[in-house]
Image (tube, rainbow, N blue to C red; front, side, top):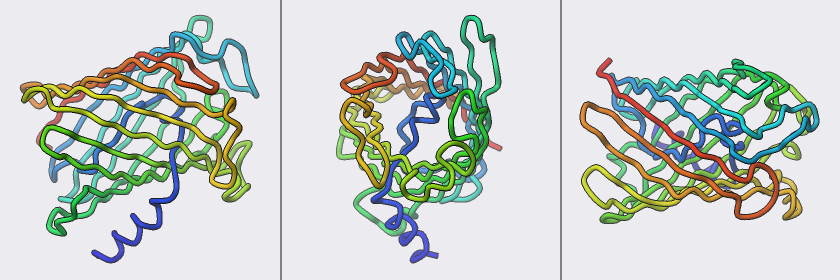
Length: 259
């Protein structure tokens, strides 16, 4: 078991992400999985203030779009969880629509191994409507590395994504998108953490895209741990360089239950 988990993590580590589910869930994952016998309900909401303004390659515009995603994650044991998502999209003129759904199993290295960093591996798969995502059936493989040093926390989520159905399907590693993301934060009180989240899209595993076609966004962010097993994350993202959406306001509200 130990050798299998470590091999899987190391095999995935050089790879990379998907555009945060095309902005349906904008989140940096910690390495720790849900505790055994607990279920976390989360609502991911984000609004694109300035995005694409016309249909591009059959994809609807993102300007003025409100995304809401329901995520339910259950911890089955000390190192394994499964999450389920339902993605929705709303925009003036297009109405409110269900964009797709994904399932996401995740496994982590046990704390008993006493590694200097946290390690876990998330895999995600599911369908989306073609007008929202060119990958009508997409797969995401996300290695997760993080560490807490005193009041300082950092996390790195390189992710690789590819299509089982859609425009990029069947291209092998040439169609595997690479999107690194990460976070640095400081614990400023028992309940609050302030930091920065970064999300990028740099091309494919086989080829780095020209700088004008890449996307790099930075989100000053806040995380709150609230009474009653509530969690809160919010951030305002702005484009550092490249193409795509120029600014996004995002929020995550979560509540953990003992079942």
